[in-house]
Image (cartoon, rainbow, N blue to C red; front, side, top):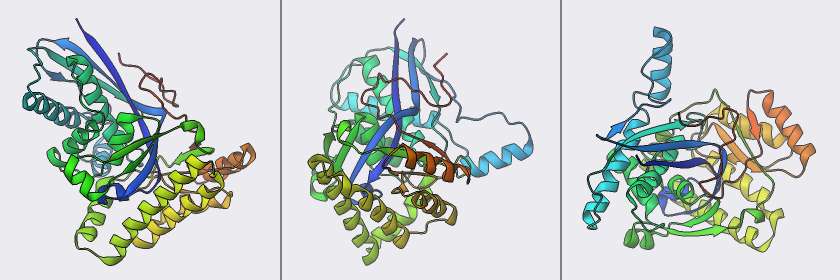
Length: 348
């Protein structure tokens, strides 16, 4: 009986987001402190086993109401199904024989929920990696994130961009250029790996109580962009320029330029979009420790640079006082990197 396991990790958008959905540029890293582990086991029928985010039992009526208001009615199984559908359609369209083999899919996840660290797309990317390994199918690396994006955006109606799926399929540190003509011609962007050793000292912090469905923020942004509002269109170009300048600075070893770019990324977002006071406070408190700070995603988590251990200790103290958890992210350079977060687990 064949068994295949795959992993995908949490990600932080370091520079350029949220321009990835608007023909911009971004620079992101995947980190192994949190992630998804997925297992496919050969079985008589295709079967998807509920995971932690497929809640079907609750401690009380109050808990049910609280969770559904916060997390909605849908969990991870829909992600597994959507990716599987598009994977098989890709195989059928390209004349790839997957035979008659079926599987049972199980996943475990310890990515903090709905704080902008991309747990849902980690489920999608882990599923695609497992399917490719289980059936022995090779899909061009540039195109694999597009399958994950289409599963969420087209199949499930989730407002999202390329960035998360790219970094979770590629791992490490990746600079992404989504120039419009290229994307429309190829259905993917231009992706460049950067050496993680070139990166500055990084931190990631999140507020476990700040869970918020990221699709809402993306929908607002998308509507304004499609209406061609001048300030929003201009902001997307600025975000892209920040990412490009950050990439160039990293490659050239000019790390001293990065804190200002990180701060500029958030300040631009705060100027254009509706940032909640709680999320803004995370950035302000972090900056009061002398570090740079911006959203890692759509809110609930931040990332940035720091200078030394003393500054990191001060950052941890200040953010801890408002209920945030802080870590030094361990960049995930391959799928084999074990998850070592505060809630370690393995598939049963």
